[in-house]
Length: 292
Image 1 (cartoon, rainbow, N blue to C red):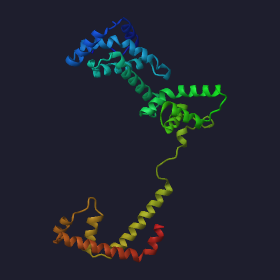
Image 2: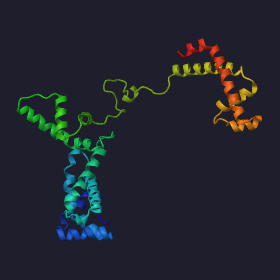
Image 3: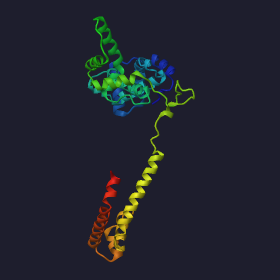
Image 4: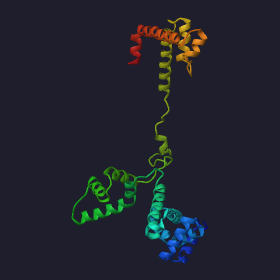
């Protein structure tokens, strides 16, 4: 499509000069795009209602997004509306397009409001764009009646007014109350210029933990070596190949090597485990103290 959404000034100028479509012409253009994918008809339809998209985009400038970006998102919403519009429903295209334009702009604003995702559900979206307005109204009404609202009461009233869960109100209030904070910002009270990221605890294992883990691993290895010495060479082979190798050998492959059936290898494995269990039980007091 020939419509350029990169310069808001040219779009605004083009939109002001665009024709005003009557219902019959609009219907014909919409059907031409739906049935024949006529790009010329689509361009004419989009251009005619671009002034509507620009007007809606300008209402969201207070959220800090560049007008050019808002207009681009509004234009995308307008094109989505044109692509999904059914001209046989008896509804004017402008009425249908408003919802797509609004949704596109609001999604963009919420995506760019914070590095942390602000919300995605319908209730969270409704709160993002209406909470401060409803809160101001409720506070004005309370002040007029000489009443004082605490934060919990205010949250409950907002939830009731907008029709959303209380937990969503509390969550959104916290997110809207502050902005993103860089961990590379220097602490104001620190004379050495230390950054906030320096105060985060290192999640990697500390030296003491590494030494302790190494000691425990070595102790377990010693106990297993003592238990393994109670086994015959063939049993040791089966245990090593079945339990200490990655990936473990199959019963069938060991049976072929030892000239035994799979069932016999399984029996020898079970017997070896029983011998090792008895060896570990003989060291039970030391093992139990270790585990405790």
